[in-house]
Length: 187
Image: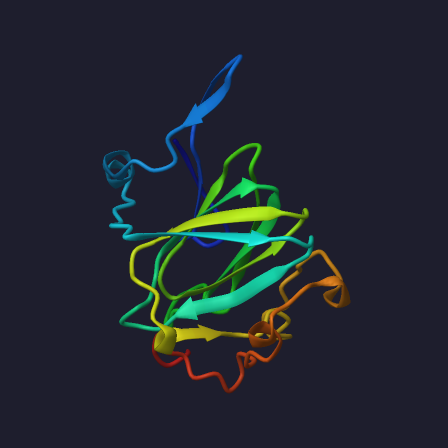
């Protein structure tokens, strides 16, 4: 497995090796021992799978508040996404900064998004399937979001907002200013 840094040190791009032959390929997408050996020691307890039928479906920016905060390992089973992680950890040197990475099913890259980050993705192809592991269970009361188009974050989603397909929850999410950060007081 190849582990690469991103623009935010705690967000990692992990690319598993693929072993192929005339039948196709095989890939080990997570190995707890191998990852622990490189400092990525997580006890994932749940796998999630989403299908977004239209291209340019945006899901995010989401989080689970403590004590249900989640580290996520995100990958694409079919299609392509622009995957975004935003640091909202109070006191972090990268607070309010974001990183965007294209994840594809043809290469199999994965993005590790730690606790204390907002997470979202934009599908770049129709019928895109996203899989992600989490290390804490989902809790409805801990579920939250911040606006995908927050001007203070200025995320470049690469697609005009009017072309995006959004849920009501994501369209009505609060902006960062005035948002009560469940991870602690903002700097």
